[in-house]
Length: 404
Image (cartoon, rainbow, N blue to C red):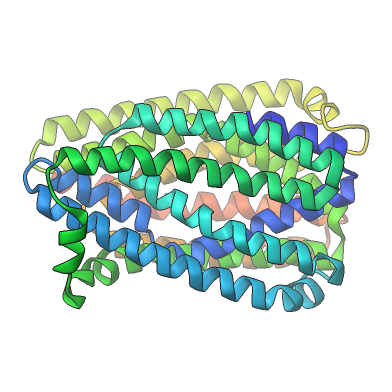
């Protein structure tokens, strides 16, 4: 539904304004990556691990995660609102976007909270509730985003995007409280007993994930703003369309990954169950992304025609669709490593990804006439290199029996 909403919005807005919307959403994602600290994954792993064997510890982790993400959300909002003028003037060459970026700063808070809430529900293995939340968000976005864009342009689209996360926050809050109550542990009493040392999980587990996000999101945002600076928002719109389709290819593997992490975390001592879960995940990922990739190759022209006559560059679409197959394997490897508690290794592989995408983009941009093509090629190469390193490590340890 969200995907359909983006197609409708692309037809409502001009190509340049749609490119502006894309870079603003990327800016929100950058700040989410900078300030989320991997809290969603932290909540998922530890709540799944302790909710049955040690409910008090599960609630403790929940309190720690939510207090931390609340504080980081406030800090992120203040920073983005304060830096809106600098970003609009110096990174995007569009001073008129400063107000829109400040609005995005407010939306950022609820986006961060949503990640932590999804991680919490995943830790409780309440996948039905996560699916319902996604359905609510999809319905809300297809209505609010399109109405906002139709009557208020870029500002309306941004506000529609934000209200979607606010609605999800209200819904998730209600059901998370029900899960906490079912454990029979008081959140208020747990908060009263918290000590600074209890936040060790943040820097021992969450920090490596956070730094990994800082590196990848920062590098990705930098190359995107480079496209905007040297080519304009219309070229960014071409890339954003291709990226939306890549996200669709990774949608089902992403849902499966949300199921896989708590299963792996709660079955650390059950090697057979872990092995089965990993194999099923890999087969689903390759099958789904492979089939959809061939579909995009066949119907590429018709796909772009959905967005209007201004979208004709098929190259980013084909490249990112193929990259989705690589990403599905890479994401699986990352989930395996995180579930085993070795989150710091993900940091190493993300550094490799960041270095490769920046280097490759600068190399291709020298000769390419369309910078969105250079960015797509750079993304593909970075994904391949990262997956080779990560996959080699995971396979070697799987053979040794370290993870299964």
